[in-house]
Image 1: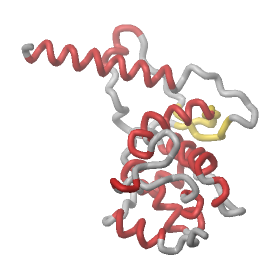
Image 2 (image 1 turned 180 degrees about the horizontal axis):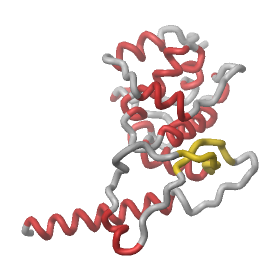
Image 3 (image 1 turned 120 degrees about the vertical axis):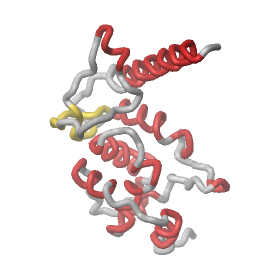
Amino acid sequence: MNMMAQRVRYRRAQVCITAVLWCALSVVPAAADETTVRVQESAAQPPTGRYAMALPLHPTGPAKTATTQTLDVVKVRAMHRLYCAGCHQLDGSGVPASGVPDMRGTLGHFQRTPAGRAFLIQAPGARNSQITDAELAALTNWQLREFSPTTLPPDFKPYTAEEVSGYRANPPLDVTAVRGAIAAGFPKPP
């Protein structure tokens, strides 16, 4: 296969993936009930027609303008599948033997200290994900309630897009050491 044919196949795959992701995150209307999460979400609409094929796989350029909308739980679950489940598994069990931590029953403990709260956003998979700060806030809030509701402190405050933006801008130099230090303060299992 020559170089031009490879580029065409790659571009077609990229366009298909972009279309699937856009559909997965936009087909379900947000309802104003207990199944929705309040977030700041981009108001920008994707290009259509022949220029839609020029979409990059991941957004680039300046930060998107945010407006208040609801992000449906179905969309947040789709983001978990797309951005987290590859390592942490669909059920949040991770692969501890390979260094991918189990989210179940542990995430809430991170909310007990400012360093732990920051770490959940600063972990490489979260910090480097190609989603907006508002989407990462909604995703992390959902994961906390889905995988670790019993360990959340009673005064838990959901993440905001502004808070996520600040944490993403200041990553730790040694992720493993920081996680170990934070986890050392977790209550011991019975």
